[in-house]
Length: 270
Image (tube, rainbow, N blue to C red):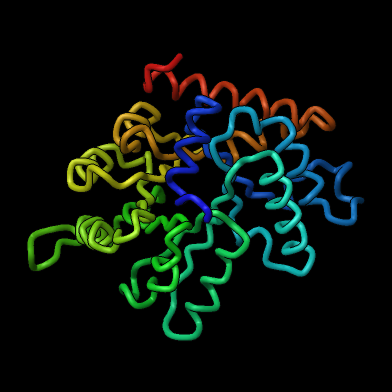
């Protein structure tokens, strides 16, 4: 029987001494020119990135939006298999949810990956097929890192709580199998701290470090539950060597190493 996702993630974090999630947002318009002649340039790019970063990665987080084409899905499947071959879990950033048969189809994505991000806007029934997969991680969007997140997430409900606070409370209730986490951006450190106080036991996926300029110290201090959680950087790692030709992958590896060391200063491990 497969161990629950957060147990496997805890083992990975301990083994590599890292909470770094490497976002594999393989934007074709930014790939090195010498890879574009490959049959599957995104897969060729990701393979090199994984080769140089896996020793520093607690997880890989491909964003489904960059792979929604025939060749893209092939590249994504190759990427997932390769990452797993390096013994690194894969979290698919898909933000899925719907109703009835549609959400059951979306949940089949969990056959291929270790965890997924989901959107709670349609309520519990839209997430139930994901929540039922006790061995898989389910990260619920709560307080996102984009500036427009406040448009809805900060609205005050009649109960006096903000929408994002209600989402956190619901996610805590939905955590019957111990497989639920929250997505809480590092660009909103005050909200990050308040959500951690509200739900002390849920691991967070914290995006916004790197290109978005999020608060790394807050991400570590409040993002981890019993040492388990993920701090993600996508562009800041994989495109660290943009315009450096063949050296792009080494630059990504160096960026992942630096982020690991930076975060570990706040974990007290390095």
